[in-house]
Image (cartoon, rainbow, N blue to C red; front, side):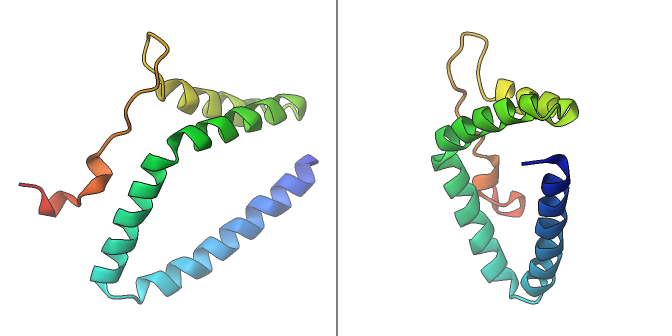
Length: 102
């Protein structure tokens, strides 16, 4: 992909996200909370796949000279691993809303 294609893609995604946010805002709070909890659980279970895809994106960013994007993605990828090279357990903070913790 060229930089122009990436820009076009990001703008399109942002527009669709804005539209979706307005639709989601109209949903009942209970529905939104359940969705967010399900999403958090899905992200936790898919951490390895996400990190693998991120590594591929890092390589693509190098070839397109997207240094700022590359630096940010590399930082996020590095945070997923402990100093001894093992993948950190994902934070469970998202698993339960703050107001429900006891």
